[in-house]
Amino acid sequence: MANNINIEVSPLSRVEGHGDLVINVKDKKVEELIFRIPEPPRFFEAMLVGKKYDEPSHITSRICGICSVAHTCASIKATERALNIKPSGQTVNLRKLVYHHENVQSNVLHVYFLAAPDFFGAGSVIPLVKTHPEVVNIALRTKKMANDMVRIIGGRAVHPVRVVAGGFTKLPTEEEMLEMRKMLKACYPDLEKSLKVLKTIDIPDFERETEYLSISSKDEYALYDGNIKSTDGWEIDDQDYLDRINEKVVKHSTAKHCRASRDSYMVGALARFNNNHEKLSDNAKEYADALGLKAPCCNPYMNNIAQFVEIVHSVDDSIRLIDRILADGLDEDRKMANIRPASGRGVGVVEAPRGLLIHGYSYNKGRVKKANLIIPTNMNYANIENDMKALVPGIIDKSEDEIKLACEMLIRAYDPCISCSTHFLNVKLINR
Amino acid sequence: MIFSAGKNISDNDRYMKTDVTIIGFGNRYMSDDGIGIRVIEELKKLDSFKEVELIDGGTSGTDLLFLAKECKKIIIIDAIDIGRNTGEVACIRKDDIDEFIKGDHKSLSLHDFNLSDILKLIKELRIDTEILIIGVKPKNINFGENLSSGVEEKIPGIIARIKKELNL
Image (cartoon, rainbow over all chains, first blue to last red; front, side):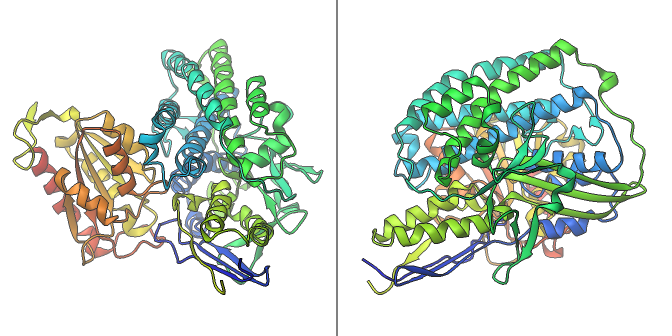
């Protein structure tokens, strides 16, 4: 048993993952807890200044290879709002369709490749090829399906090039839409098998009540568009995000921490589920029930389950969207809206796979004058810190390996951009 | 047009241009991390590569699994922490990949998986694709739009190396 614990993580040698985690516990109380990674948006905000209206979406899609559709769409929405561009209903539906599949790409990657090894007691996904080949094959098939969906609609599997301010540079054909429908239908047996596997895993029993923020819509389970909603009982127009979301400089990190109603909040699949679970497809609701996911859920480890439930919803809703687009008929005349380079301010808010993503631009005669970007990992910083402060004292009597795994799994459950650094904590216990 | 893949691989291996995929990984806004992307952009300008699948892979490493499955030969260009000097270009062939995996050399570009892990997965999944990795040691991977001069000047040599590899 240890009264004191010192967990230190060296800077991570990854492009988006130079992360540090420092936890010092004395007499079973957390004396110091610091979690920090650098903040790429500040560089991109500066880079956007002076750029023409058709450039920001391509530039910001490069902020992250896993969230490129989210950055593209947030950027486009901000630009369209600022320049008063009205995309067609067809464009919005196609964006929602492509959007679903970045969420599937990312959720598959996280649930099966990064989190599943924890649940199966493996060091990484690689041993699972031998021990749980079906899990790996399901992951590969589902990821491939989502990649193909993004490629068919967006022109590429990552960093889509056809999704632009005003609409699409090229529409998918009716044949491609029907092919995508077939690909989606083919997913269901794998989703069923996944459900059986996920029912067998033990999710750590840890709860801490906090505020959950996501976008929300009365019409659907919001990923692409909606108001900003809090489980603390407020809802605002996305253009007014600054009324509620405050960025705060903290001394131990170059990244800003975000606050809304309290000193921290959570964004991501669990936040979306807590705010919008009633809008899930009936099928996805059944999956959630079967896996014990009920709103409000305050166990951050259940974020993995919420991500899986979202995969089911995205498959269901994509079929609905395809049917609707085909019923309306693909129309070249509605491919692009008129664009007039103007001046104005606009905000684009979407749900990136790992949570609320905000792009706010001011334009002067079609060129960016000012940009503000807030990424979900930044929003989750303070909440991760608060979860750690609650978690560590409760597990201080466990073994070094168990403490290490619980800390790693908690950070990974949030699916932060540094989750790629799968096993990164060096745990040093002192005074044992 | 059928062409030999060159003397460095099995003489029995012969590929159509369309059997070959070249993928560059990296982020063009992170200075030298963008070397893979820059090489792909340069190759796209060349007529001799018109029939070769050229992919700007961004920073998503798992997609390599699918690409490797779908072609007979794949060439990967990436910023890798290997070698001693900035701009040093390392060519890692099939026979060297085990050693590369053992060394756990870091791809500096991928957001989801380390290149070594992807290669391990390719091996575990018994994907039997000919792989050549061209790794370039970066000088600067901070935010920025330009390559360091010591890295940029390697681009013609890398392209010549790829041409030689594919007998173009």
